[in-house]
Length: 210
Image 1 (cartoon, helix red, strand yellow):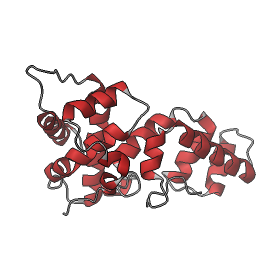
Image 2 (cartoon, rainbow, N blue to C red; image 1 turned 135 degrees about the horizontal axis):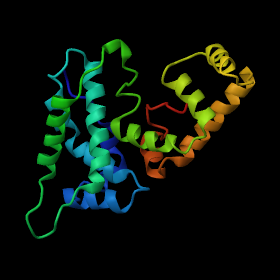
Image 3 (cartoon, helix red, strand yellow; image 1 turned 90 degrees about the vertical axis):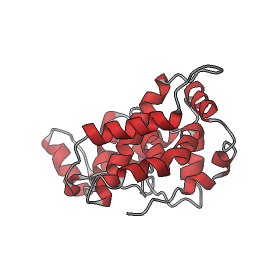
Image 4 (cartoon, helix red, strand yellow; image 1 turned 45 degrees about the horizontal axis):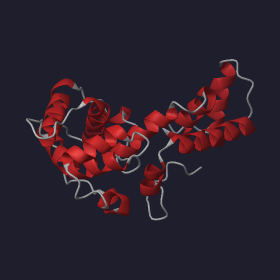
């Protein structure tokens, strides 16, 4: 199973951080939560290593990709509490990430392939993490419609029927309007540099295509 490509590593915003130390990237991530470039740079630095550790843990590449995203989601949330001290004994970031991968291998159960909705090429782990945070800023009904149509690939008639069965007075036009509202709210909540890296004209990511 070959290693995935990391096209974000060639973006100018990420290249500008290539000489930063691990500690500087962690500090940037912690001090500037509205900027995603520090986490992307960390992901590009340690992404191949962590994938290599995981790729023999499942039969399907979909399962490996899902486990990989789970690892980096855990890293994303736990980095906020990581202390790397200057001038004294400090944790090696590579060792810390290796331990997170090992914990995931030990503790996480792999879902059946047919239940996995995640694809690495559509939502690389940094983008996936920031989208999950941004979804909290989307109103409930538009968020539900967005998730059903984007993640579960439900067609509008099915969404309409389910919502009407739950007592929602909704039309096909309403569904499209709510979905567009969700796209706009989600994009507005994403850090600008995340958008620059993943939604530039040359990017293959198409999460917001409607």
